[in-house]
Amino acid sequence: MVREITSPQNAFYKQLLTLERAKGIKRHAKAILSGEKLIDEVLREFPDLCLALIFTKGQQLPEQAKGRKIGLYCLASQLFERLDFHGTGYPLLLIRAQPLASWNAAEQIKGCRLCIPFQDPANVGAVIRSACAFGVSQIIILREAANPYLPKATRASAGSLFRMPCFGGPSIHDLHKVAAAPVIGLSQRGVPIEEFDFPESFCLVPGMEGPGLPSGIEALESVSIPMAEGIESLNAAVATSIALYVWRTRIETK
Image 1: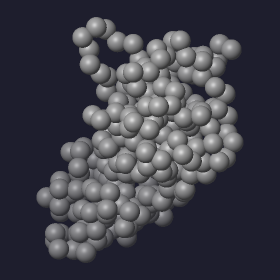
Image 2 (image 1 turned 120 degrees about the vertical axis):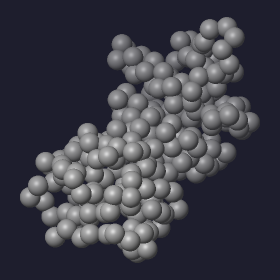
Image 3 (image 1 turned 60 degrees about the horizontal axis):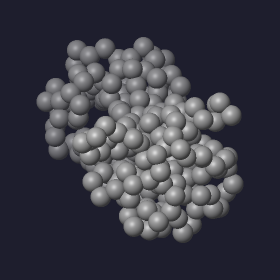
């Protein structure tokens, strides 16, 4: 059954609007996905996460939704446009935003555990996508990081968020105190990455946008991405992706 919403005062619609922010996502344990390719992928591969399709008159529902038990909400056009945070003009998908399990820092796992401190949700999503592509063992969302279910993050992750084991971690300031594996920072003052020998198991932590790594982390081992003279820095997610690529190629050639 399709439920129509025409008033901005509708309680369910008000709830949907709160999902633009981390507080609303955490409170309701829900998130909104946008984009035809992402929505089709999640409907097909992660049906248990899917709660409802949100659309407006004249929009065709995804083929993957046909025959499924899923909520259907038809919004007045102006209400839908306000909710379509990225202006896709395509139906939106309401999903369960499952709380992140707490990270077991003492667990012995081979490979790279990527610890994300980024406050820009687009960077969080982009680096989760790279982590999935390069075979990271775990993703640790540090306390400073943006919520990975924010609209910009889910869009940038392109579905990788649902494919990777993600955990809620400590503050970046406390990471080196609790992690059993070596913590390796990504810093402009680090050893050039081509000269660095990655251990079998480690935590990689890039600096936050702007301030970089805190002093406690900088005292540990760190690697840097060589750049042309006069270039101050790379985008945080781009630099992390390069480091993951170098690590991956190293282990494949050993």
